[in-house]
Amino acid sequence: MLRIHFTPEDLTRVRVAPGPDFLWEITNSVQTLQRTDGERVFGTWRRWVRPRLPESRRLLSPLLPPRGYSPDFLTPTSGDRTTLRAAVDTLLGTPRPRLRAELSRLAGTRRLPGRAAALAEGDPDALARLGKALHAYQAEVLVPHWRHVRAALEADRALRTRHLMDGGTEALLAGLGPDVRWRPPVLEVTYPVEQHLRLNGRGLVLQPSFFCWPTPTTLADGDLPPVLVHPIRHSADWAEGAAAPERAAGPNPLGRLLGQTRADLLRATRAGCSTMEAARMLQVTHPAVSQHMNVLRAAGLTTTVRTAGRAFHVATAEGRALLAAEDRRAGRG
Image (cartoon, rainbow, N blue to C red):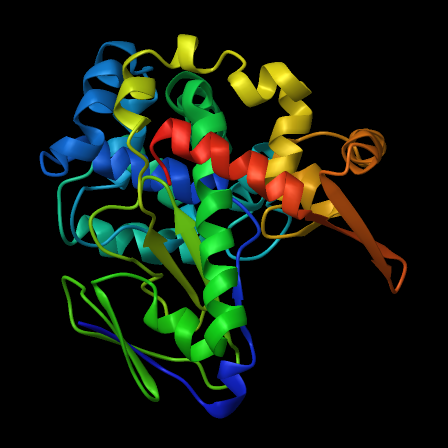
């Protein structure tokens, strides 16, 4: 059992991450790929992935076992994480003492390949290989599914926002799924080991993850910025898309109607987003977001509120109706 201890101040500092975290999705998917449970959700994806796995898998799998301890440095909580390159650069800048300590702890639970020793010492070549492995894995395994991953996390964020607006922070915490129980002032999470995380006024980031399975997870080091990574609810069309992501990645009906970028932007505004958040989620420039938002706003699908120099975009009733129709068609409603 994981027990997260809140103070009154912590309840005011809970926030939902704005989108997928590249490194959490990589680590969770590497772990889920090595498991045999969750066949209904991930079976089709595993069968699609295994013949296509890049050589980088041989480096990543030993570092990310399907159960038990995994090094925290593989999912950094600081630095720029808005792109995979920036996140990997942060990871590769991990101080050598921390590399040595975390990899030594992992070596105490399982046998590691010889190359892990060079990584633990911060060897530049070993770190470069790790960086290349992460980029190769993302490109070969996750990029074909990334549009679906991003859309599913946007839908989950909209659900969390609704809980927060309807019932406050306690409703947000209580609605995280069957493996999470809110017993004030402690959040109890089904977990393979006994662990206590005392927030002490630091707050908590809720990070939804497409490939997190089967229960939420967190960092082993309680002194790091607190985060709870939790599974999302997968839509009915995921298995079909996982079997043929190249076909599924083509423009969907909403994308054919609006253009794929505008369709993705409209989905992002379901829960509301700033120009910066939309640019980060869609990996486009701020001017591109503004240009597409102008079109959506002129069509009556979104509205924009400006405060403190920032633009905040929200889907209108017409925009939400269009999204709801898409959800019903895809079996998500």
